Amino acid sequence: QVQLVESGGGLVQPGGSLRLSCAASGFTFSAYAMSWYRQVPGKERELVATITSADGTTNYADSVKDRFTISRDNAKNTVSLQMNSLKPEDTAVYYCNARRKLLVRTYDHWGQGTQVTVSS
Image (cartoon, rainbow, N blue to C red):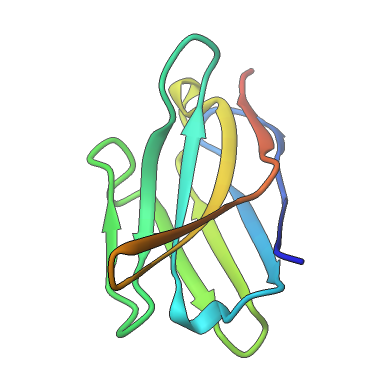
């Protein structure tokens, strides 16, 4: 059974830091690109950061570049998002995503989300 379980969300003051983690099971983690998305009520889910399966190349949304860092540990089947210099506009539910494209099919797995609130 595929599972992605996020942890590490919470309330933090502007300028603070949080580290989100996602524990994966039930699939070949190392074969999947891993991403973090976020969503606020009434808006579409937004891609925050991605790390590839092959060589660990990372990509970030412009809004989080130089503040957030995505990393993965294939031995532990985990992906993390280190968030620094947090702003109120970073407040959202953060979701872990695993994606793999194999021939004509795309395999997509999602976690249940973890709330991040940035407020004084």
